[in-house]
Amino acid sequence: MASIPAVRTTPFIDGGFTAAGDGSETIRDPATGDIIAHVASAGGGQVAEAIAAARRAFDHGDWPRMPVFERGQILRAIADGILARAEEFALLEAVNGGKPITGARREVAGAARVFSYYAGAMDKFFGDTIPVSDTLLNFTLREPLGVVAQITPWNFPLLAAAWKLAPAMAAGCTCLLKPSPLTPLSTLMLAEVIVGCGVPRGVVNIVPGGAGIGQLLAEDPAIDGISFTGSTAVGIAVMRAAAGSVKSVALELGGKNACIVFADADIEKAAKSAVGAAFGNAGQSCSARSRLLVQRSVVPAFTEALVAELHKLKLGAPLDAATTLGPLISADHWSRVDQHVRTAQQGGARLVTGGRRPEDLSQGNFFLPTVFADVTSDLPIYRDEIFGPVCSITAFDRECDAIGMANASDYGLNGSVWSRDIGQALRVAKEVRTGMIAVNGLPSASSTSVFAPFGGYRRSGLGRELGMNALSFYTETKTVTVDLS
Image (cartoon, helix red, strand yellow):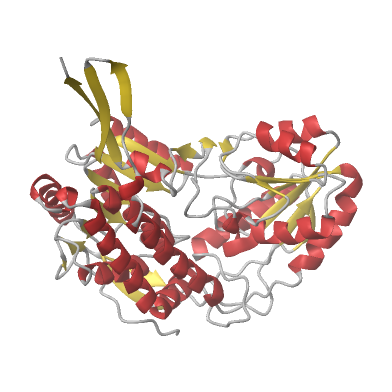
């Protein structure tokens, strides 16, 4: 069994770890199935205690009233604290989340970068002065939203926690964060870092546990806003629960993203990028570009180049530095991905490669990178988010066909277009209904910088994370009018 750093495994409420919780979640290593920890779940009473602490810290505490530069210094200390324990965080992400260690280290550095960015952001996020009339001075203020609940997914646990906590804290909000019950360990270690950085009591509270906690957070009228990252089905439930108290809602949900490859594209480069975009994190990403739309004349050449790139991937133990593709998060999730593959085969899609467990990795939740060809738009594999290392190739003939096929989706999160004709590439980029799109480069994991907004259209969610845009959700705009006469 892989060893992990020692980490506290109880809820973090009002500045300290509790003695116990209400039951516990068994945490497993997805590469072996071994139990690595038991994490106490927050009970209903502890959730109420955490909400009261966050409410008290916002209504009566120093945090929202602190000069923004001073808050920024504390966020910068958190960034430094993450880097000081970077290898411990990376080990947790690798063993708990099944991430190859090299990728886990990049994600830890990315989480620190997010805190560092927002450490210097809030003193650059201003209101406006509005010329109403000669006798009136009209201006707006940006004030913290209040107490916010934040629910993070299992596929990027530390990075998602940073994406939510850093802008909320920078804005002066107080937070209740619920990590996924599958991957709570790095978030609890982040609480240990926060303790030592001068964050006042009640500003950050971590409440591990299952869906019931999310329901409590979404419904409670003492909470002013909720930010959720996860499946579209659960996001809809969160939105419904939040409606009763008319709280602000931000949702980062699913995706079924298209990679559009024209005949004049650099086929080798497009295929190499497509592997990273579709199979990064074993395809367990809402940004995965799993629909490969390829102009008909180059489908054979693109398929050959794609399979050649796939053979360069190395499945294996996450702590092996040579590993580039780890396991799926759980045995249950492995079964769901496998069922999608069987359904695609039964529907007439042609299996090009993969589609099964690797013979040399009988333990753990490993799944070979899988490619289907001859996929038509009526098949579930074309429409449904699989969240695994599975992609499909569908041919198109004309530019307008590619745009129509890309937009024939309930989702609209991410995408890419490949063409040496920059006019064509930009026309398509403008017409595809998606929140993010790359032209002639960048796997999906690299297409988002902390400087740029992240989010999608339609059933991919509401609002934007990262960049200065994230501060819009975590602040309220107040209009002030002064009579000068």
